[in-house]
Image 1 (cartoon, helix red, strand yellow):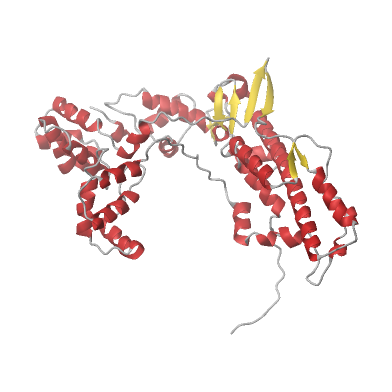
Image 2 (image 1 turned 30 degrees about the horizontal axis):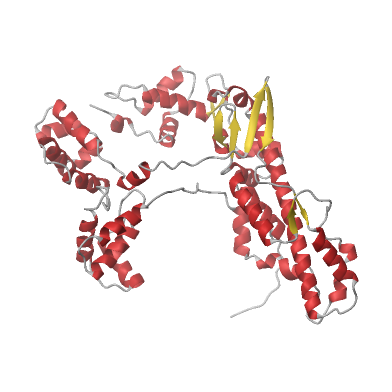
Amino acid sequence: MFKQRLELRQQQRLSPQQVQFVRLLELPVVELEDRIKKELEENPALEEGAGEVDNAIDDDSYDDDDYRDDEGDLSLGDYSSEDDIPEYKLAEISNREERREEIPFSSGITMHDYLTEQLGLRDLTDLQKKIGEYIIGNIDSNGYLQRDPDAIADDLIFKAGVDTDAKSIAEVLAVIQDFDPPGVGARNLRECLLIQLSKKQKTPVVQKAVTILRDHFEQFAKKHYDKICKSLEIDEKELKRILKEITSLNPKPGNSLADTSDTTVQVTPDFIVETNNDELTLILNQRGVPDMHISREYLNMLDDYSHNSKNRTAARRDAVQFVKQKLEAAQWFIDSIKQRQETLQRTMQAIILLQKEFFLTGDESRLRPMILKDVARHAGYDITTISRVKNSKYVQTNFGIYPLKFFFSESAQNESGEEISTREVKNIMRRMVDSEDKHNPLRDDELAAMLKEKGYIIARRTVAKYREQLDIPVARLRKEL
């Protein structure tokens, strides 16, 4: 049974100006340049260069009542209400943490194009080619097919209307696994390595490598080399030759095309911090951010419309609405750009204040523990604002270019109770692992004991957490013969 009731509740909603500011704040300097160019092209009321106009519209000189009709008042809300933006979008912009991925740059043929080209050279039926194209489309960037034939068969019948079975898909997959680069189309690492070995000359070393991967893969993955030697009745010297053959294979064949590309991505810093006589100077990169002003022609046009009482027709009312809309949109954009620049400036100043020793010396051990809350407190902004600033932004220093994320880390304590950055502890751990005896690698409890000797009181489980964050395998998997 349905019932009607009144409910009063408070809800925060972003205005169109706030939405625009948030979107501009997230952009790095290169993307901002493109965004400004686009706005200048689309809004004739916005012009490049210094101007004398401070405000887009003088509301006192324009009376909406002069253009009232039966449909209601003509106002800003008629064409730029926040109701134009779905509520779920406003909530997403208000609450989400920025997870911007770097835009990949590529040149030449892609892996999928290369595989499709090879598919066309094979003597296959039309059905097999459709199956092959779908399989290739499901191969990930590393060259692996993460779906089994049964799931692909279901997709083909429901999405493409192609009726086939798992056996037919497996046959086409076998053809694709014969393509270049070797190992592409494999469903797991074991299959990938075996495919690559199958293309090599059948020497005794290669044949025994196949045996290890086919029959003793779990022992190989866990580096139980003594068990492998015993099962194959080989000595350690021969096992070394076999392992050398296996480790020469490519575990990610899909990356082989990208590896040969000489395309590089140029990072444009959003900030420049210069050091001179122990004094730090912050420069905001203003590349592509020209002076902008409101079009005097459009202001005069609006003034003419608002003071001319003759011929107030529907067409004239539409013209007034269009002009006012463009003027206010231009003013909002200018204000948003200024607010963005001020926010970036204050945020970076707070980071410099907190990490002054690093900017003066370039020594990573001088980095202080710093989280979003610390910067927000010094800059006077909300944590979500700081999060949007730090993502996809870079700073150029006398010691190199760093992403803003580099300066953020949690805290740890040394034996004197002083707070230090976890980055310092991780760097020490990295050096310990790099210099360890690979025949007898350091366990987590041994790393914890060595850190304690250096004055860092870190629990073994914390060492394990830092090791995982550094992508360092456990001691057993770092062992070498």
